[in-house]
Length: 522
Image (cartoon, rainbow, N blue to C red):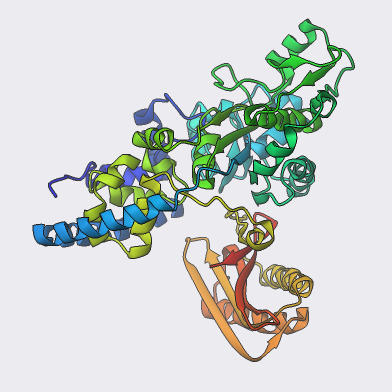
């Protein structure tokens, strides 16, 4: 009850825009220097004003929360603690340590593809994106504090030699398909989360693998028939991964295992570490790009583990309760997927910075946060997560949020809207579905988000039917902005779809950064 906020108001605002050193490649940097440059470079920009506005809103939420906290009595806390303990016991009974879940994350994917195709970029700090926003950065650039979701103009202040390469999503999609072909060999039902990451369930593969002869576990080097030890060492130092730098904690795959029938191949074992190392080896041999992986009993832990030995490494968390709880003890809350900078700031205000603190303060949290948030916090504190990967059901929840360059021409906006409608209609046709409510979500250059929707008297599925609605919604926003042009950063087209059996699903198809994404809205 007496925990004090861990940051002042000024420090709290800085945290929204400051260096996130929980990101791979951002460790050990001069935070104060980098944060000072970020703040000075952004002041007066629309980006800064939007962050300031958001921070003020979060500060108001924190003030309200702290007032609510001050009114909590010991009797309320005691009652809440009893309920928490009861819920904890129920969650413990649901703990499943039987599955082997793997999260694979390509290392600085977009940047790695560009460096592969343009070797002179390998030794330079570079990023993919634009002066308005970056999609990713290589590890050389990260040493300067340059990261994804950072405006390019700020990144240039941090690293004047930074090379910014415009994105080429057609190329990234093609490489992603090559990688997914390999994923399917280990789990046909793998769950792709974006072009560069996926969840796989290795449980069945490992059972089958035990009976595999060495021939099925032997893979050849593709670049040279019979590499000598000198060739392999040179490959390790220079060519294996375009994203590695000297401080890399990872180990290149395929360099420390048993040799196969000759020096031109690699023999992998039957355990999960060897199976994952084999998969990463095959990805590198096929694409010359490296991947990092996390191995754990559930999806939440696997994702955290995949960041543990980045770049070009892997980490396995043993499937025991003791190992899981030890792992969660000192894990920063921000490392957990789903706890972003807003939740982090609110938790920090309560003195909660590590996952173990969540468990210690669950009674208090249950009185301050929603039931859904509290259950999530409790599951995190216990190291619990989903153990079920279902691509058929979940693939429509794939999403990546990026912003495209300013789009202010009305004709181009209508053209983009039609393209969205066409893609939505095609996907609805594949699923055999129709929709009754068409929505249009727009984000302008001031980062303001507006959503309009129209419910139709009968379900629609054809491109022209959907566009007729979306066009009117877009025209309304354009007219409202007049006589000034509507300046957009993002356009999204959600639609409530009706299955033949009557069970409604909400899907969203949106364009961001020139790339189409489909996601299921829960």
